[in-house]
Length: 443
Image 1 (cartoon, rainbow, N blue to C red):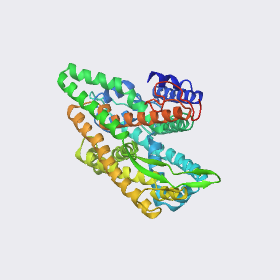
Image 2: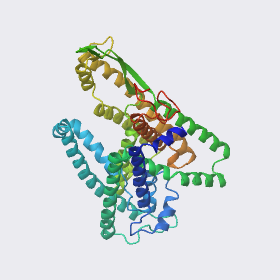
Image 3: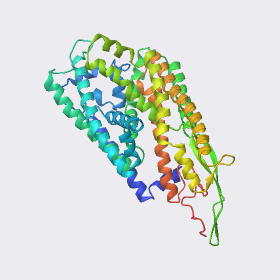
Image 4: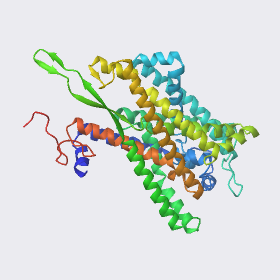
């Protein structure tokens, strides 16, 4: 492991990508502490002291504490996530967007442009919702959070937060293009990790006042460790489909004939379904905040984290997005067609439609199991932590995002190392532990 980490700094391109990613994340974290005007931060801090189990506590977790600080980055990356969901749904149900996707690189650039425009619109709506919500906040002593409520505060909040969200979106795109890992996912992960010290201190204070005892903490820590181990086990699990390539004679050379597996992850969709589902689950409570009508307020209270309505809907959304995202990112017909064109086939399965149907059946089973795993990891720990009143960081969604994104980022770093003939972080390669591997055919 030490040798593998040293190898990272021997590859100039990888080293620069990692340093660039860390720099972008550092800028994001610094922005969290840039305050937006118009709010009494002492009163806001008092309000969040007891807001761990409502909409604002959940949004505060995903924004990395920016809401509690009332920072310019309050909205964080969530408007961009919501816009991405809408555009990916549009690729399935809107023919014009589907045609753009089929145009290749030019079409994807156009879709990304529309996603940015939609992000601005969503950020405007969410910033107005937050400004309305802040105006209604009061501490236990009756102190108001907003210094001067009214349209001047709302417009100022809208402009500040929308600009901040667009900047965070830009940071995420820069990380994806010039760094390592998925920028949006890493920004969410950085925000969750930043809440660790506060969550631990919060739990210690509960221990000091007797709300929880040491045995319960040990049991919960052991349970969380088991959940993390389960996440790592499932996320690294693969179903390997054997692919045989026919031999071809070109001149005096024989090509093909080898067997190579087609690896399919057990959890094909990764951490995207919980992120998408969490973003969508904030919508009912947001509506209840903007429109303080009794019907919307009742709907908002039913969709607070920890309620049975919230949990059932959250599970349904996770299962839906697991199947939907898998269908968008993996097309069995295209894979079967590419295999046929390259002379590849699955032993015992005819090329073409039968191969596509075979891959579709396997993918459906994997997605079904993966969605159940995602729902269990996100809901079961959250139910337990709700019972003990622990912070959101200790819920399943936060753990899944942190572990899943970390594994994906490590896999990308490993890919860079292997392309430069170095052993990966997980000890891949023939010359494990000996640094640089000799290219094939070298002495």
